[in-house]
Length: 370
Ligand code: MG
Ligand code: ZN
Picture 1 (cartoon, rainbow, N blue to C red):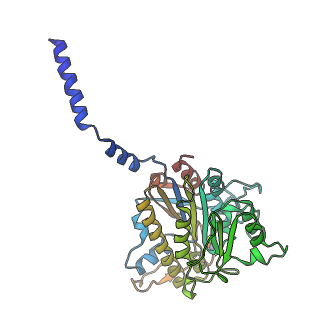
Picture 2 (picture 1 turned 180 degrees about the vertical axis):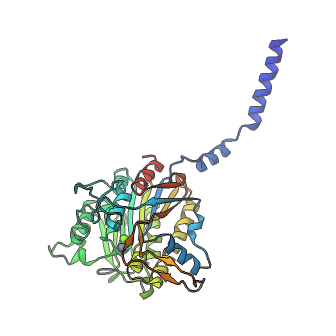
Picture 3 (picture 1 turned 45 degrees about the vertical axis):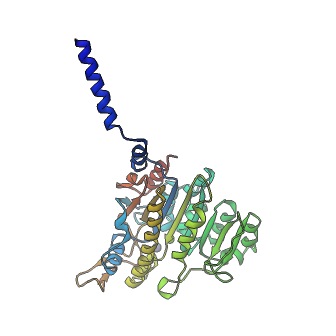
């Protein structure tokens, strides 16, 4: 009798388990959305000087909306450098790219000047396709800290020469003169061509019409030195970001790593020019929207969006409205305030909370299951 009861209980248990058992399809669906799922691709968007007030000012001027609102995960990061509470873009980009705290001016080297491997270089080692896009020169501190190693951010020619030592698949930004009219007379166009690169520029080609030889890596230089502000006619960054995603998305079965920098939000802050800040942010906001559209459709791409630091000590003062921001700046330099970080896609959950900027590197690696 007792045995009989056990049998019925067991049968009921099996039956109830069976009826609540999800199908293979629903399991697969749960797995792709479950925390801990590793993305295939990582797109890192860095708005230079894009603090919370810069975002807020642009948002109010944009019908009170920014595409950042689409990110389900938000965090805050501490930006200080090893030698100064107020970081520069070199120390902060090195923290993000390499996970080490270093001094202002350092390009992917530690406090002792020793080279530290970057996440872009690690991505290359792991067979991912890689890319850098910026609205500054491509040898400027932020992009440089992902690909070059130098004790000073000002050594632009040496930083450009480091591009020849890597396998980066695509780079788009300013600074042509550091590649083809150098003090040392090296011509990096020629050196890169010997290493399977097709390198061209804004002066001789149109990015929208450029024909890249099959299998070649690609470099495109958008200006001789610094690119101009978007308000004065710079028009390539949105297209370049789309171009890079398109170029990279099917290039390697291992996936891709891409960093796109909105460089000049910072320059607006240094100029204490609110229109400069907000026009650069609103262009970058469109790129954020396009990248999130790609990631939402792709389903295997983690997007991480942050700033390297705040610039200008910007405040939105009384008297502001959705047409006009009454801006006040406390400095024409950077400040040490924490800056926000936003994440979207598989692995996004890693980026909640308050943490040091060096943790961004470790969180990206953890998300990628490296
Ligand atoms: Mg920068
Ligand atoms: Zn700056």
